[in-house]
Image (tube, rainbow, N blue to C red; front, side, top):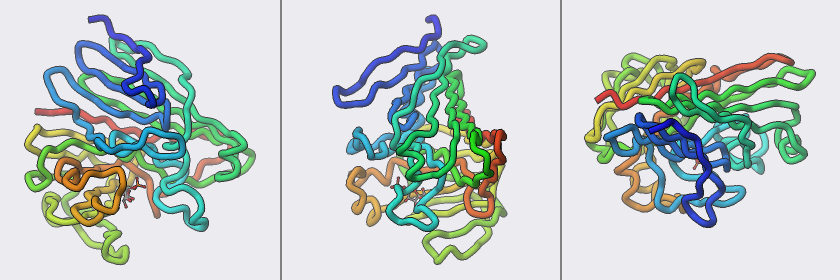
Length: 285
Ligand code: TA6
């Protein structure tokens, strides 16, 4: 099979999507939010989870896959009226180029300053997402400051993984790392041993190292570059029920391990400078 990059819609009302296809994997990306929807290595199931109640419309983030949180993570620091997790994931991006690199299909999408973005983030910027699909999935988000003033961002590649049964997951690689527990008044703790999940978890770890998600579907590696924070989130029963795009039992199937720069790890970018955060996802077994 020749590696290819093609446009194809998967649902009538769905924004256009790109499909990166080779004999190693298939990856789909929606232009809405430059949102990686799926990554299916050969002879495997999708490593990413998408809600069967996801919204596919303007102004809404798609629940699942890899939403891009930019230029802020979580609630806006001072203006509640601004969209949670920033505006990158609810904007329509442009396809800049596609092709193959060492036999692997890739796509580069871009979002840049507009009147709408200036309302929310009063700086000139260029944001580029590069996705390369091989046996692994490499997602790189590059911010370039096109303004005359420095600006500060927080960011995340907010990856949702399909792990089949949350009660049978062990997340390793965060041992002895400190973390902020967003469910315990942002108090700091230190991780003892692998992370297992038996309740709502929403933690920001001080971490730039690779993690491994050992689950009933296999072992997934999540390797960050240019990232010093890792967020681990599962909404569990009550929060999942409060989310309109989450079926009640869906919390059992998913786990977020997010490659980020948040809080003390925020990034200051000087005029003309660029910064890249990257995650490489692979099914190891
Ligand atoms: O994953 C970390 C987090 O900030 C959680 O607190 C939860 O809110 C999640 O992101 C999803 O946020 P969203 O705005 O997509 O519902």
